Image (cartoon, rainbow, N blue to C red; front, top):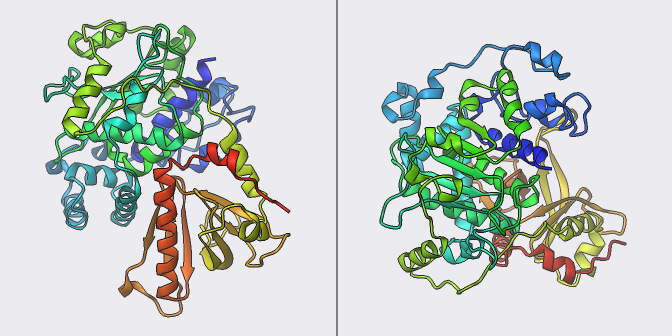
Length: 506
């Protein structure tokens, strides 16, 4: 029961690493293979070890293991230059790369030089791509709720009979202005199982940990972090290490999109795995880059941690000398941040309810007539817009087509392929608005004959809509921004909405 969660979790960890560390030629090499594929799905050793691969970089030469394990690997290509893999400081970059960093730092003053370097690195040092990602992240930051210790404290607490939280992510600060570090000087972050809660709650837990981490990193270079993952729960706690659910998938997407700089030069120690997984891991070496392979440390116990961390940086529960007091940490952060934390408020792990998925399925059956006239909560705004195709897929294009766009019900945005309001026009896509952001083109970028652009950016996809006039553009921007703020502040609460909203689909 732990092998498949581990495989999928490691897969996502790998995918969050910079693309030049990848071992497949494109994201399609993995995403196009069905999970149930007999040759490369989770059910075979080849599928398991391919899950460690990352996206977007040249593949390694075909190994004999690919035939032995029954899977196939991409055709070999010329390896990327190793220079891009090892440069962590500004001075180590090429003159061209330094000019890119300087340009982006001048445009995005809220990002440190190290963060900009991370965005460039994750986008193959393509200036245009990095600029777009930074702009999206800047807009996303504006909409994402400000997170304090009061938001994450319930997840850091243990149930009365347990010796630790069910699942959490936390930076091991010493509560004296410093942080515990590994032998290479990298801050140590502890993950007990996996974070849990709603999609927004899991994202807030990670963003809070990243915010704390940023305080101990050099803003002028790419920084690393040492991550300790305890797969087994502490005594009395529930097991939260699991096959990634919707919330965890959202976290992985968020990290990949908005925090690419957090994945550079990391060491991840995954402890408490079954003996079979630990012994089988070396077989994955032909499928991984040396950097990815050496960054993952898989063990069924905690003995290996002592080769990489001093005992003072290893929690006592993992064989070290560190007695980390979660409640003391909560009180320290509350005092430092000037916030009140409700005493004894606790959030334990519960299996993710399917009500969220059920609600999305219901919305996908919604007709345009039902969305506009028959939902209990009237839509904030609806009307015809132009939508640009993504260009992905065999028959996809980047042309503009007329759609019906509806902002609502609360927490969602829906568009329909036909602009007609009828009982036969069903939803083409349901977009969750929590964690989303809205962008527009600048006035001087208007092109004659082209619609004014409005971009709705989520962690997984960017939707491009076109409007005929500036007034329409501003109206849609305001409606979507209000809907996003409501969705974030209410934590979207699709579980509650599933109980409240009754949808007429015909």
